[in-house]
Every structure is written in structure tokens, then in C-alpha cells.
Image (tube, rainbow, N blue to C red; front, side):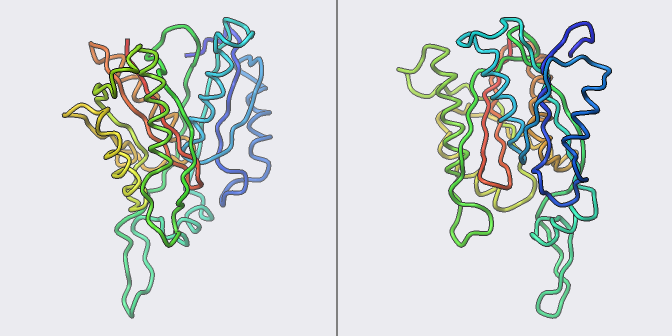
Length: 275
């Protein structure tokens, strides 16, 4: 979406700094490559993290283009995310963490095949964010932290996702001047990075129960990882790009909720609204 004739700020979303399977000095090398063309960037910043890192990057871009800040009113950002799980070291880490779908390990004298877990993949996605109308509008956005992480001896009840989603939804409701009327039952689609892991499914189930007042009766759940695999830190940006395409071609204004959960405590939520 970013033409070469106009300069933009670049937010580069990359995996966690010390994740297995990443080359040395990855961020420095990619920043250097981006600064070398073919596009002209006013600035290049890097956001490291997991699945929700894209939401954090979009949050930074939204803050910088906010009318409340004395910044360039014509400022715009490109959020570019890229990730890959296919390096042998990354696959080994997933297997050690019991996160690799189809992995095998001995159990009580037999070979146990992991029927759950993520299907590792790789990919990249980009968004153009500005005050100019595009595919859709970001009507609400929030980050939160989950107090119960995977591997702990207590069940998760999706507190982090719930907090992020309720904050984003409340922001959207305020923009509609409907805060005094309770939840708006207008959410038609929920996008998430569910990927076959029971922990994520538990989070999503409890979060969905708490958000039921915001959802239409015939709401749909969309899980892109079941189609093209788990994209790691590129997930949120890829899902947002897909949602934007759907919203722009819906023929009428729709409202979607996007949920992202990193392997660490960060959880993100965005409300996307079509025109």
C-alpha cells in the first residue's frame, strides 16, 4: 500500500531476540537492508515479541498518528512482520516444549504422537496505517498480560485476553457514543491465533464466555493457522491484513474482533470496523 513516491515510517516486527533458530544480529541486518531501499523510510523501528507483537507495533503507530499528539498530521506507518519456525533449532525447541504437532516421543513403552500443538510455518505481512481511510478502521486496541502461563500447575481462564478485549471493545463503544447502553452485540467475526494447543483453546473458551454480550448470535470464529500454519510474530499483522480484505469486500459495514496471544504473557486485542 505504500507508494515509493511518499516516505513512511517503518515498524519492523520480528521474533523474540533469543528465540531458537534465529541468525545472529537479525534485527540489525534487516534494518540495514530496509534502509538500503527500494523504499524511502523516515525512520525504522523494531518491535520484538511473539504472536501479539504485531498488535504492539500497531499500537505504537496509532499513538504516533493520534490527533492528540503534535506530530505530522500526514504521518503514516508501514508495519512489516516476518517470522519462520522451520529452522531445525526452532523445530527442536517446539518439540521439547511439547508444542509441535505430530511429534513423537516414548511414553510407557510406546511411541506417543502429539495430536495437538502448532503446525510450524513461515511468512510475512505488511499493513499501511494512517489517518486516511483504507481497507478498514481500527476502532479499538489494547494490550494486557496473562497471569497464568503455559506450563504452570494451574489452569488458565483467559484473564489476559479478556482484559485486552474488553478494553478494546469499550474504546469502540465510546467512539459510538453508546457506553450507557451496555455491550454492543455487533461483533460478527472473531479472528484468533488458535493453533491446536489446548492452552490457547482454554484461553479462547473462557474469553468467549465473558465476551458473549458483545457477540452476535451467529458470530463466526476464524483461525487462519489451520490453513497456512502458525506464523509466530507475523500472525497478528497477517490476520489483520486478511480481516481488512474481508471487511472491505463485505458490502456493508461489519465489526470484527482480533485476538493475539504470545508465548509469553502478552495478549492483544483489536476491534476492526469496515466502512
